[in-house]
Every structure is written in structure tokens, then in C-alpha cells.
Image 1 (tube, rainbow, N blue to C red):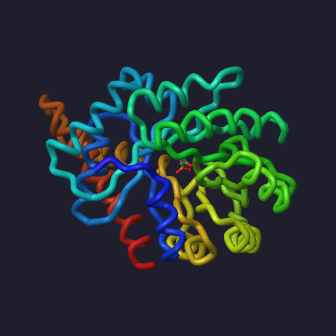
Image 2 (cartoon, protein in one colour):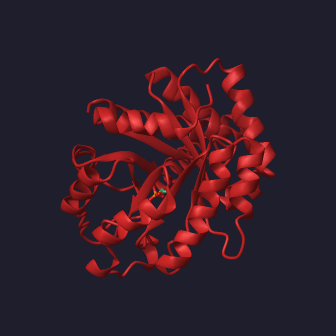
Length: 283
Ligand code: 13P
């Protein structure tokens, strides 16, 4: 069942639970994640960024693949289809295309702009999305890429600015920078749990943690205990798939059925999804 993330994440926040977002890039990813989450009886958010949407063929293709897989695979858990990191600099086309195609949640990421512009761009999407019952995630502070990351504490979201941003935009969920970043973590990870806990107590909307790959199981649990209602995972899924395929190809040098190769990656991918869900279920 495709649902908007608003109620799902509100409920998670109320109950101190956390819902995973797993990013999809193709049919196989989508199928593996849906099947594992359904098997675990745990709600799931399928996130996809603009690059992967183009890779799959477009917004309508993605929405139809998700909707029809839910039907054909008899998926009976709540599923959210979410546009991850819409980065439109000058217009809100990505979010609007996603909403028009049937996505149930979008992220307007204008975090690289100044506060005023970020508010304007995000609020515009909130107003449009509300009409369609679609949820909007906003970001304030800078959650960069691991490979380019050299931020210090100045990169953290400012507490008061966060509160102002949430009030001014009317977003449904909020992604702060608390020392998390995308990709592989290098060096010692310094997550600001105090900032997370303070924000979580003060604001009524759910908090989203980006850059879930590479965060240890214990730290995931700590994030949830301190108020994370959603954690995003992407890089670890990619790495798992590649590992599975590489091992399979190394062992089976005369393979000619491509489905077997893809399946080898799918099993590894599903194992990561299973592991993350089991950690979150334990909370
Ligand atoms: P990772 O690639 O670090 O798991 O981050 C995923 C993410 O936050 C997507 O928005």
C-alpha cells in the first residue's frame, strides 16, 4: 500500500520508532527492498534521487514500477515513494514532476542556499504538495559527501535557525546536519546526539538522518533513542550488490545467464536491508 510519509513518520515519532529509507536505482533494487520489508512486516520508504530517476527512464516509470510491484508482489506493508534531494536551483520542477507522477513524499533540498532562499524554495513546494496530500522533507545545514567532507562543527545545523525554518516552511519532516554525511565515513564519526535530542524534544515534526551507511549498529540505536524517526541508506546497498556480483563472477567464470549474476547481488542487497530493519525493529 502506497502511503504518504506524513502519518507514518508522525506515528513513528510518537512511538519512538524509526522507519528506514532505502534508495532504489532500478527494478531489482525495488523488488528486493519491497520483498524484504514485507517479509519483515516493517514499513519502508523507497527513496530515489533525480540521477536514478533519469537512469530508470523518468518519474512516471519509477512510480509505475513501484505501484505495480506492490500489486504483483502482494506487498501489504505501508510503502512511501520519496524523491530524495531535489536540488533544482532555479525552479521546483523535480518536486512537481514527482508529485504529478504519484510520488507520495518529496525532499526539497535547498540547503546550499542562504536561509531566506531555502525557506522560499521549500515553502513553495510545501504549498503545492499539500494540495495533493504529499509530504515534504526540508534540510537546513550542510550534509555533504564523505569524499569531500572536511567540515568541522560549523557545519552543524543551528538549533534556533532550525526552529525558525520549520515554522516558516511548514515542512512535514526535517533533515538536520548533526555530523552525518553521505557515502563512506572517513575518520572518526562525531554525531551530535545532544543537538538531535534537543531538536527532537522541541519540534513536533519527525527528524530524518541522512548518510545512514557506515553508521554502526549501536549508533543507529542511539540515533533512534535520541529522536531519529527516519534514517536513509544508500551506499551500503550499492556496495553489497557489487560484492555479491563480484564474488559470483569470480566463482562462475563461464556464466551466461545474466539473471543469475543480478540475483547474486540481490541476495547481498536483501541481507543489508534485513540487517537494518532488524536493528530498527529492536527499538
Ligand atoms: P548513504 O549513501 O550514506 O547511505 O546516504 C543515503 C542518504 O542519505 C540518501 O539521502
